Amino acid sequence: MPTTEKSPRAFARDGAAAAARSAAKAFWWTANGLAARALTRPTKGENAREFRSEAPAPRRNALRRAWMEALAKDAADVRAGVYPLTESLAPPTQALDRALDFLKDARDVDRRRRKGDGVEVKSDPKTSSFPNYYRQNFHFQTDGWFSEDSALRYEAQVEALFSGAAGAMRRRALSLLAKDLVEADQRDLTILDAACGAGAFLSDLKATFPRAKVFGADLSEAYLSVARDRSGAPCVQTNLERTPFADQSFDAITCIYLFHELPPRVRPVIAQELARMLKPGGVLAFADSIQASDAPELARLLEAFPVFFHEPYYSTYQELDLARLFESVGLEEVAADQAFLTKARLYRKPIVSGVA
Image (cartoon, rainbow, N blue to C red; front, top):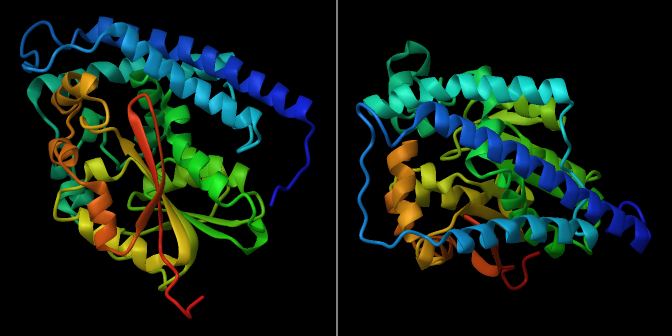
């Protein structure tokens, strides 16, 4: 149930504000992304990564339209009151500091890219207790998932990569969830953001469901520290392959951009754990990369992504049948959405006859 009543004019103002802020973010992070590529020239010079594909290059106009659609869908949902205006613009000095830090780190990222070094963090004794697949510099990022600096920098990295559309793409899952729970009394809801990372989507959940009990969970304590500060939500450090939560603990679980970073053997294990934690009738709001079958015209771009950003399990994710995977653990797909390079799905755990 809504926590506040707003007039149509107020929702329209919020939608206009969302569009304006998205445009400002898009300009800022597109400029930063272009600056990073100009500084590093990842396809030029010594030890440059090579990439070949038989798929045709995506048409620039088609890519731009898909990007604009993500921003437009986000603003439309704010205008319709599906979720509140959550985008905020950092003060100029903070925005400049974040951009300078991102650009400075881009050189280190490119050094790892040229060396092909995606497991720099694996040699650190402090990471030895974590799963091997987790002990990598995903995206060639400094410190992998193991430092607060990495967590503070992560949002800038993804926004620069996706030209300011990262938040809008993530919120396709929030849109599906909010529409499904529109008639629910938030005071009765318990929601888990699984693999919450540095807490950007967790903050969106808290803003959309302010009366619900919202929790975050992640394997990285460094990222959880930032997530707690950013969202104000309680967070639990846990491996999602086996969590401390009881059976049927949550009315809703969200899982954003996790499965493309999991080995094939781990995906069904975590899918089963997510299903176990859901109450009958509960929903899983899922978002991750699109697959080539969703947008064949972008196949070449999707093939290039793991080459330049160290995504060791991305190619197997591209072949994954998500509907079949979640069906195998008892979850039914009930809604779907897509924007730019992200697909969102809503899966429901059926209510067994006679069991509430």
